[in-house]
Image (cartoon, rainbow, N blue to C red; front, side, top):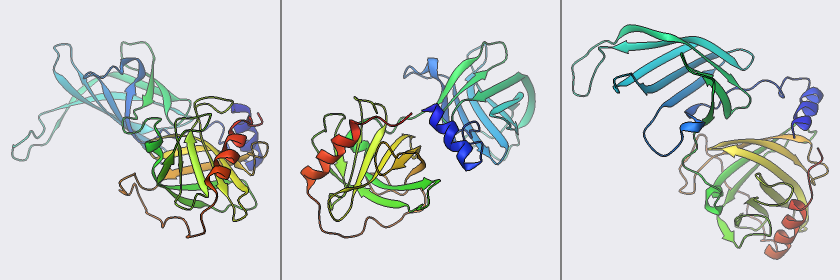
Length: 282
């Protein structure tokens, strides 16, 4: 998969294979994720500036707030881990927080938009990851409206689909979900050559596969590859969840799929299994 990223990045004349912007949101120290209160990070990168807020504890066990910000370059960041005191508390009148020194330098490096490493003052480097607590690998996790945008293709047409129906799992995943017209279906794949990905296929009006999507995602954003088959899935793919299963928007909301005559569901499932069984060219 990495070879494909590098090859496509070179084709597009960009540094996509090497440059990563960390996904904004809540991050955790991966080894400390045990379901109990601990340290957490809020990371946001805008343009080339990174801001990280951290909640942790001092040596006496008191909750402590930290903030660091500065230039993010070449997937890396380094800056002082600043502390503050005397700010506003619940129910207080206006109070301005005061600088309270720092505990040293914190450094981070990222190998993807959802995985990186952090070195706190006085500690060895540890893995950090984007915290995903709202979605699992169940079929219901794919319900809602999605936007699929291919890159590096002569026909960069986006697809906006609303996944709202569910049937039994295919031979490769946790449960098959699809649009009201049975022309677009997806599944979290757990076995076969594409295990770990979400795979989707699109049917045309002749009930034949028109497009195939392979992607991984965290929360509301994903990336992967697309083509008319596994063998031709060489175009970069950007994926965005537009609404949740409750129709709550995650950003700009688009209309659902066009109204067309329903396709044959069994044909859609059979075509899906044929696509999933075929490995992507590496």
